[in-house]
Each structure stands twice: as structure tokens, then as C-alpha cells.
Length: 111
Length: 116
Image 1 (cartoon, rainbow over the protein chains, first blue to last red):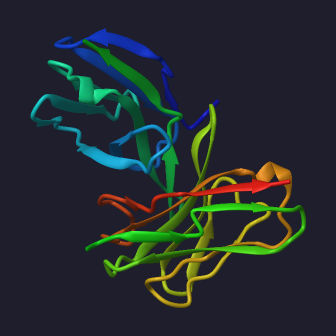
Image 2 (cartoon, rainbow over the protein chains, first blue to last red; image 1 turned 120 degrees about the vertical axis):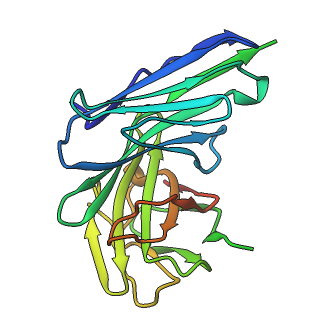
């Protein structure tokens, strides 16, 4: 079983739709959580950090459920420019700090 | 401009010929890391460094070496490359809070390596 699992998609949605991505992690030593966005084989870029209290940035809302070891990302009012791969990222305290990426969820937003 | 640079961006080499991919950051970050990205597998961490002279293995360290002699540089060394190391490689850096990469990781543009 992978340490961080995501639905690979692809998700095909019309502009204006609301779409939700889920991510589960298996290591209880996981300490920090993020969503990154990656465009077509370019470098990943931070979309948002994820906190237990939940956090929102414009059309994007992230949630963390530590008890269920589950992270989510909600995108409201999807734009064409949201088309990308969304990566769930977990920092695990192993004595050092390993970074574990999910394989990513591909989103296509269509006009 | 704050950035992470990698060189070369593209490299085609032959099995067994030692190579080094350089990574440099100008943000005075403590944490640096190397990843490889393969279709269907996502990004996997090769090695990371929490500070100068402190390095540790990620999930796929076999066949790679790293060093961190200066804070800004974190080269990735393939002593004897093999075709299964053909991949897209990313270097990243992050400010280390409480020792960990708890803030945003900034990524370099990637190095596409082909080993024949």
C-alpha cells in the first residue's frame, strides 16, 4: 500500500463546477500536509498548506482529518486555468523529515 | 529573484558514465531535497538534507549519492547510471522550521535524464 494515496482521475468538469479531491495517508508520524499543483511536467508549486482547522484561499478549501488520516481539497467555480495535476504531500517525522507525494489527481476543466 | 536552479536541464548519457546534476538555491534555505518523477508513480524522494553536512535517504536512494558542503548547493551524483534511472529529476528547497520542511518547498525547473 502506498503511504499517500490519491484518486488518479482524470476528473473532467465544466467551467463553474465544484470538484473535490481526496487523499489518504498511512503513516501516523505524518506532521505536515500540503496541496501542490503541477502543470504538464513543470515543477510543482504550492497551492496551499492544510490545517486541522481547515483553511480556505479564495475558491480553494482544504481540510485535514487526523483521526481518519484523510486530506481533501475542494475547488469551487472551476476555471479553465485550474486544469492541472493536484498533488497531495505529507511530511513524515522519521527522525529526519521525509516528504511523501501522492501520485496526483489530474483535472481537466472544459468550457 | 528567489529561485532554485538545476543544471543541466536535459541530459542523454550512456550506462556507466558518471554524472552530476547540480542544484543551487539563493534563499538561504536549510532543507534541500531531490526527487524523481516517473509516470504513474508521482514524485519520489531520493535524498534530502536538513542542513550543511546533514543528509538522509528518502524512499529511492539506491544508485544515487549526494553531498551538502555548502548551504546553497546540493548536487546529485550518479556514479554508474543505468537505464532504470531515466527520469525527470527535481531539486527543491525549503526554509527549515523546527528542523523540518514545514513551509513551502520551492522546486527547480527539472532535469530530464535519459540513460541508454
